[in-house]
Image (cartoon, rainbow, N blue to C red):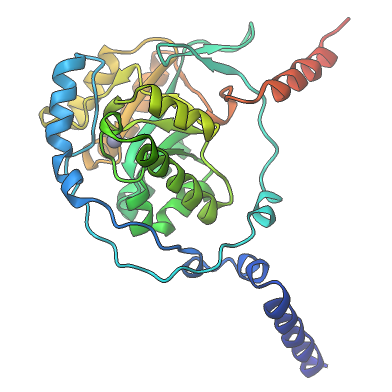
Length: 328
Ligand SMILES: [Zn+2]
């Protein structure tokens, strides 16, 4: 009996391998095989991040540019042989039902309720420049869970290549993944083709690993322009910078969780778009920061409830759906 079923299984596997290799791989959920060859990160650019962040900060003031250059040192990833891409439609089937839109981002990158009765004392938590390190990331995810909070993790492609399992962990833990470009360079100075590649390659890689393309984009250093915005729009990405810089990336906050908390609380406003990074002192600050925000009456926006570009039909459908809920 057992032998028969094993034979059947083997035969099935052979059929799948022969006829539909990518589907087979996708079904097996093998992480290693889903890697694709990507350009090595530009370590020179990564080294320059701190300088650029400082310049940006000087030119844009308090709301200024974060960079997360601290501790960043892009290392060359080894070249990998290209492999077949898994069929994304298989994974898309597993995607949860879209949540109802509750918030819209305004031109100042702040969030406003879409309907009366939706809380306006809310913040969006975001963490840029990862995924970097398992223990720290897990700690942050645990803290978010403790507070029933959702966040956006704006990832860099070269980091994802280094830590594909950590990207999957973020998705598996129910958090949202955003696109923060491949190399974390200042895109404002780059050609249209390079900007598109910096954004597009992250879309492809994240979809290959999680089955879902990011729908939000944050330009490194908050430095964009018409070319960057157009490239993001073409990828159906919601382009944003932030409205509350935690300054956790600044050297004044290094190893000082209290400084991160103080900075966020000082800049707090309803609908705040809070920029933070996957940094040790931010992870250390997180539990107390979320407790303080809650004590002030603030809730945490679920990024999946933010209105996205190109969802007019979805919005209309939701309006219709909510209309049927209304008492006539
Ligand atoms: Zn960044």
